Each structure stands twice: as structure tokens, then as C-alpha cells.
Image (cartoon, rainbow, N blue to C red; front, top):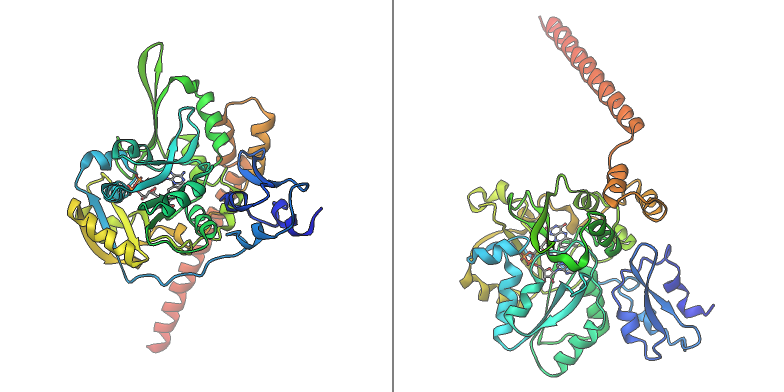
Length: 412
Ligand SMILES: Cc1cc2nc3c(=O)[nH]c(=O)nc-3n(C[C@H](O)[C@H](O)[C@H](O)COP(=O)(O)OP(=O)(O)OC[C@H]3O[C@@H](n4cnc5c(N)ncnc54)[C@H](O)[C@@H]3O)c2cc1C
């Protein structure tokens, strides 16, 4: 085993985020990206080709973490004026407004979209019609492919480039480029974590929906409202249009995502938290809207928008014309959105889940339910703890009462 590549191969020690910077930078083409049994891609090194230059380690965004920027005092609560855009976006449709602005300047937009085979991958678009495919959060880790190389090419052609991705993808792109570009704008999000693509594939197939029949997938359908979002899969069965629609509180896939059952291992120790990825703008759902701007929430989605550079602030000024905007304190906007600072802890039964997925022939929805629902023992323990806490509460109340009477008695 060669000395300089050992870290990349030890998955337990090295929490690779799959950003692809190492593979795209390797001059000897010694690194390929291969999916593991959970469906996440990792760098695999061809020792024959590797000349031990160490560039992969020098440019790795997990090994070489970025600094944490100061939190701007103010942020924005923004809703696009276009209700159609908001309907197709996760929160307030701000990403759409930003991409429209870049495209107007003959720019190129990079984002995550499903390909013809319903695999999520990063690609680019040069027209607004084409770029609509990027709208909406997809709760699957996207494959970056050669997008970093394409970004660099467009930048060197002096085109304006907008790259949108999870914080670890932005960190990777910055490491890959190795310098700042005036014509590059990066947009990221507060990220809960990236789920396994192969679990989603199995989930859909176990629902009895074949890939060939799918006509659309929306992880944030707003038919029951923004907070009550649903997973929606539109498909055709014997020529007739059908839809699977299930709220996030009921749908096993969304529940498994929310409860961290099948996130990438690096998401449990994310090195791009606290906005350290270096993006110009961070987008998020403004879950604190009811608490600080109740009248602003029409349940069609509100984005929290935080600028981290002059370029980011200028872009926000541009999109103000097309949207409804409120200036808020950044700390207020971040309430109820812990993912900006904390990595998601793995679910207690994450390992059991993957072992069942590989060994059992039960449908994915059943396995997810089995793993996220508490066992009888856990339920029993929970009841015992509840009874214990209630008894303790009443004992304390009685003690307090006795102390109160004794104290008053002494005073008399
Ligand atoms: C995996 C994931 C986890 C998230 N976790 C949180 C969270 O914990 N808290 C929170 O407030 N917000 C979270 N978000 C962000 C949020 O859902 C919205 O993306 C954000 O509010 C922007 O919404 P929008 O309406 O402006 O635009 P949208 O149209 O919803 O923006 C979509 C943008 O996100 C990009 N995108 C979509 N899916 C992916 C993906 N899988 N990988 C990389 N890029 C993708 C698209 O390329 C596009 O640029 C998460 C998003 C993703 C993808």
C-alpha cells in the first residue's frame, strides 16, 4: 500500500464526502469513483498509475477544512412574486430568481437534476427552460461527474457561472479550482444530509413504479402546504396518469431521511457546517417564519437567504425587484434550523437498516418502518421513564409545598 493514498482508502478514518475534487485533479488519472454497497461513491486509487504526488490529499476538502466566516447580522426572508415558481421550488423560489439573473447575462447554471434514467446528477443549462429541471430539493446525493471540469472551462471562457450544490460540493469545487474567480457565483443551502441514491431507487421500485413509467418526482410537493410537504411521484400506468402522494409525516422514505437512517456517513461528521463552504449565498427554508414574521407566511414557501460576499449581496439586490422581501436578524432566521451548525446524528439502527436492505426481500418501506418505529422494549422503557418522571415531578411538588408551609409557619 502506498503511503500517500492510505487516508483516502480508510473509510472509517476519513469521512469522504464524495466531492470528486481528487479524481478530477489527479494528473495520472489514478483515481476513479466507485459506489460502495450503500450506494455512495468513493475514490478508488489505481496504485499502478499513482505517482504519489499527494495532490489528492492536499486538495481534499475534508482533510483541509475551510475557516468559519462571521455570521452577517442581517439576512432576508424572500418569496418570489411568481407563484408558479414557488409551487415548483422547495421554499420561496429564490434559487430560480438567481438563476434567471445569471442566464440573462448569457451565463451558465449548474445544479442537480434527474437524468433520463431518473438518476440524480449535476449538469448545466444555458436557457431558463432547460434550467427549470434544477428547481426543488431532491433528497438523494447527486453525482457530480465531470461538472467541476465543465465549470472551469466556462470560467476560462469568461462566461458567468452559477454553481449550486450542497455545502460539501461547494467546498470541493473551491478546492478543485484553487483560486477565486470573479465570474463564479456559488449558492448552497443549510443541509440536513445527503441520502443514498440506491435506497431511493429501491423505494420507488418497491412501490411498484417502474422507471420507464415515471413522469416526475417532487420531494417537496406543496399540495398540503409548505411545511406539510409530500413526496410526489407522477407516472403512467397502462397509458393513464397516476400519482403517488404521501406527506412527510407518513411517507417512509421522507421519514427515513428526516430520521437519518440512510445519510452518507460523512454527513454525520460534516466538515462544511457553519457556512464554512465559502458559498456567496446560503438558502434555506425559513422555518422560523411563523415566530418572527407570521403575516408573511402564506404556506406557499418562504426562503431564508444569507449573503456571505459582496457578490451575494449584489445578487440579492437584483432579485428584490421580482420578489417580496423582509430584512431580518440572521439569528432569528436560523431558529429551528439546527442543521446550519450541527451534523445529523446517525439513526440508532442505521447499520441494521443497511444489513436488512441487503439481506431481506421485504420492500424498502417496510424495512424503513421496522427500523424507525421504536421496538416494544424501547416503548416499554419510554413508558417507564415517563412514569418515573411524573412520579418525581409530584414528589418534588409535594416537597415544595411542605417547604413552603414550614417556611411560612416559621415566619409566623
Ligand atoms: C439534501 C438537502 C438537504 C437540505 N436540508 C435542509 C435543511 O436541513 N434545512 C433547510 O432549511 N434547508 C435544507 N435544504 C434546502 C432547502 O430545501 C431548499 O433547497 C432551499 O430553501 C432553496 O429553496 P428555493 O425555493 O430557493 O429553491 P429550490 O428550487 O428548491 O432550489 C433547488 C436548488 O437546490 C439544488 N439541489 C436540489 N437537490 C440537490 C441535491 N440533492 N444536491 C445538491 N443540490 C441540490 C438544485 O440544484 C437547485 O439549485 C436542503 C436541500 C437539500 C438538497
